[in-house]
Length: 319
Image (cartoon, rainbow, N blue to C red; front, top):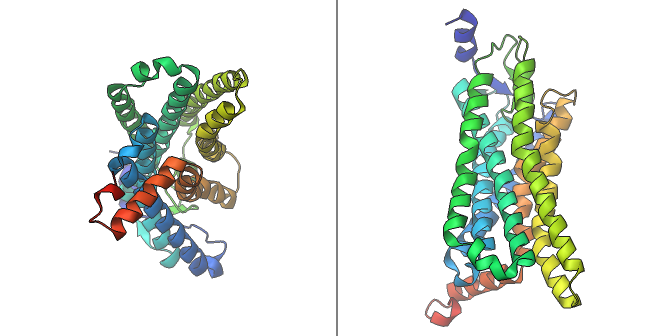
């Protein structure tokens, strides 16, 4: 093993998240703590409702439960370390911990891309092929899709994490970010990473652009079907079932694409942190609100849960 490899793995990384605004760190810590608690409680509630309530047994809610679980993983992976960075600046992070965080971030991003695609496919079949919905969107197929979404990102994430941490980190291990991500870590590498970046771009196209293209194709088919509906009520109902998912897609892809399509682009560290906050903090916090506020069945399930909590002796409160 080369000497610099031993040295690289023997030194801790120091995350410098929001070091440019030291006076705002206590306020940011309070805001992010509130955001993470909201994301954790909101996604936990969505996962609980879609697991327990008989009224939320449709495949759409099956995929929504897995999306909420991915967002929970995001919150648990990012939240504690971000709070430590803000409240205890300068505290080191071992290379193993940094690599593990990167692995989980990449895995969660990949899983969310695939889950959003599966949800778009579910809506496409429901609206465009309603007579074949039961046969195409079967329980077994949904379970297989969910397992694929969770597992598909692991080998890719592991491959790039191991490859990145095999490079020599010759500069001081000061990461200008609040998390260990590809972009800030690449700036610490003192050898040529063009081959690595080219492979990251190819993987990003396969993991993000291809699923996004499938989502766009699904919605093109949905829009064409809706425009041919004669009933205004039917058009409104069809579009309302897609609105929440489409908004989440826009929020997620609009931010992750900026960071992962050009990992070593000349964005300032501050702008990268703001963009990363969008999909690691803001999106997990907003997803439960988007789905619960716009979905009558989720709101009805929440009311049944609250009624059952107040009157557990009433069996009809939570059918």
